[in-house]
Image (cartoon, rainbow, N blue to C red; front, top):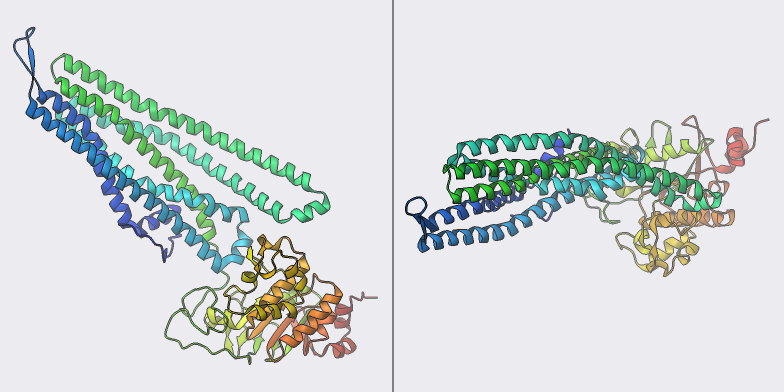
Length: 598
């Protein structure tokens, strides 16, 4: 009855937090229904224990004779029968309770992992947009804490179903034996739940506020760790430590606000069912003295009243967990609702990039597109044409302007009108575009783990080929700085490396991928002049005969370019060889040589 493993979590329902939670429940309805059936049987068996005990006392011990001279005899057949019933109920409760717990844990894990999959898959499709709109700490918290809260909301459902069923059984038994006691329970239980629900609402509000400040604290911590080297250089550690201490105190105060309401709720969970139990026992004792109920029924009523605390606490726990899950689902939806900048319009299945040279599509009947070095890119917005087999440079007085043209050429978003060999990029399968056109930014992302896996994620190249790409990027010093070289582990974001070393490792990774079209944005902005000269010469050699475009204003790189496009206000105003533009275009000369007007 388990729906694991989760090969495909299915599309999430983004209309509201409640609908998202219901969507998760529908995705695992088999496990949920099975858990509810087990929960009903388990808690009903527990609820019937006092009833069986009361019947055993009444039927197993028979009182005869007039008042004042009665004698009690043991009716062994009836006593043994009810003892067997009690034993059977205990065994059923124990066995079914174990299965119920297993189903509940499965519900929790499935909901938690589905939420994690929803977030991780959406981050893969819309990562840059999420990073711009949602703080890093908030994204981390969706997986670290919110997914667990959402799982808890489904974990409690089987027990809640059992609590409802047990309350119904108790009410029926009491109404059958004593209508007055039955009415007390039927009225008292909803009143207790309603009273506790009044406390759950302010608890929900305070939990949401605590989640907000905790997310901001996580973001501050992540930013501080990422910029620790800069902070030490500026002597700003104490300032950020004080800021973190202040934020942590805000989180502590928010936690105390939650704890106050939580304490009231915990106290009421004991007080209100206790008062109801005391009332039922008091009425039952009076009825027993008056002869309206038997001694066995009094024992049964007391046991049922004491047991009633369990379903009531379960109901309150369910309300609390659902409130926490709503807070978590709201945060998860804030991430999932971020629109990805690029959407595949061709119907091809979304998937991670294929290994270099695979030429495969994720789905459909379309034949694979053969890789070819003859790829021409045309950007109508800027007038830039990247010819096949050439090293083209994009130069602008505003570096961001050239970077934006490179981003359009790489289909960084779906506003691009760029043509690849005459076909609009937006009309091509995204998987094919990513295979043929590679955009490498000025600050490449380096992931923790073995250095070789960072450079060659698919292990599609030999060590010699990897080292050749390292040599082309002049990144031997970066590899040597990692203990163990290619087999060594790179820390998160390559923190142990300098900015120039990270740039050159990113360049080595791009060269190793060997795409039809390689787009580089300021690949040498953080390296010294001698290293930059080596990188420029080796880039020309390693990409000889393949299409390459570089957004840069570095004279060392521009000297190696086959053609330079000079951009002004986002449009190509001049093109030609570097030396020709230096001589003929004053604005280009000022941009490249950093001359000032007048």
